[in-house]
Image (cartoon, rainbow, N blue to C red; front, top):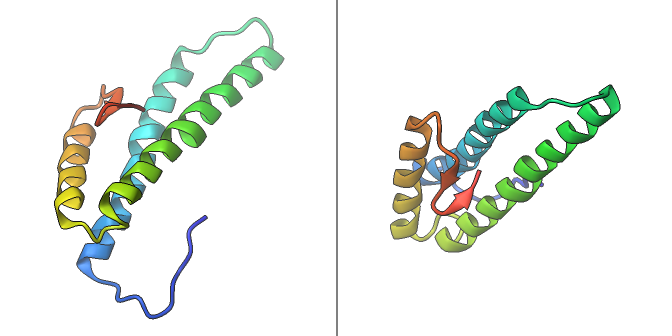
Length: 107
């Protein structure tokens, strides 16, 4: 759903804002890999259904909630206070390979 807007200056602040979106994907993927590694099922069909459910939960629902809240709180990077806060919280989340939450949100 990403859109490139014409006339927008590609600044370091914009890059930092967009990097957070990438980092959400990274920490979510790390959590999905953990969940998939623990997955067990009786049949291949069951395994496929469970896999799809895990991916939908983490990548679509949880990542989407975090991304939307981030854009609202930071006003798409224009609120420097919240932008700095989110980046600090994400740095701590990335540093913890066992993280299951980000800022109160499940990964």
